[in-house]
Length: 395
Image 1 (spheres, helix red, strand yellow):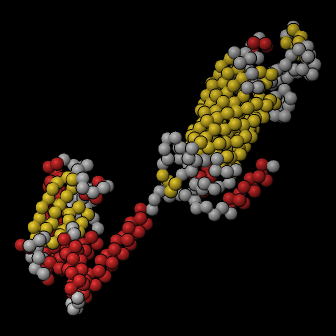
Image 2 (cartoon, rainbow, N blue to C red; image 1 turned 90 degrees about the vertical axis):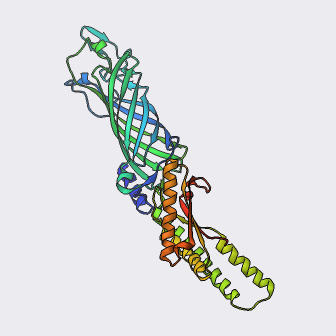
Image 3 (spheres, rainbow, N blue to C red; image 1 turned 135 degrees about the vertical axis):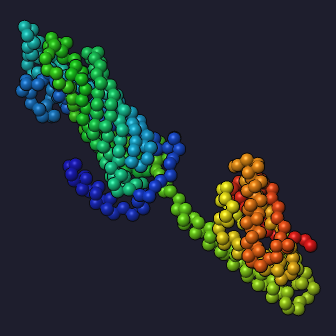
């Protein structure tokens, strides 16, 4: 049955169309990716005291099998790694009481216990802290729409036999298979193994002690549901290169619009027109040459971040040369980083850097005035203040 389910799940996985996340993910907040589990369990117990007694080893034997419950709460820290706290058990078997009710009398030394008075049932709980690794996401990449996930786990905790008042250190390991039902619910099939100290079953109190130094252990098969709390998925890391390309495309479009506007202004200036049109053209030119143009810099740098920022500066320089106008270059730094003294130096160097570019464009040095104001918070976000502005001055 398990092989059939696995084969079906593999076929479904092959048909998934949701993009697979292999190149990183955005970390969610602490309150995201929590989950709770509730399962019904079938357990087969094997006692250290039955060694060499010849008991049948089948997990289906009446004196071994027991039904119980398990509950867990956990958090997935990444698509691959998680942690859960799990409590399980409640009803178990001590195994040594093989004969139990309906199996006839049981003899311990000189004492004979009637079968209808003896039962090997116990009450217990198993509390484990378990580390989980999702192999499906590890090897195939994270896919929020994947139907089947395989997650091995291992843990450490305590086991208490409430019937005999005994405590033991316990170790657990297993594999959890989960099938996606919706964004919030998953169906679980958990196959686990537990081992603890040799006195967990407490039967030494009945049998008068034993010499077998082994461990008590049991196997479990659990079926249940997992419910995700809060945000359950991970988002991919933003494609920074794509964002830069998009921003650059937008800048290129704006520059193209500016070039078209400049061409239209030049055309209107060179053709006769009624007075109202000339007034509009003059005002447009005035707005263009008196509006500061920004050239941006990276944090604590004096090299221009994007050389395409100089396209508009070049248009302004051309206008200043043709009309014998002066240019003011003003340097700034952001007030959130650096000392005031360092920011004054940095803003001065940025202004000088842009001045040198204007000189390379043909503007006479005596036509360029520089100023610097250190760290400021004129623009939002704060890193927009890492800039120098260029504008035509009123002569």
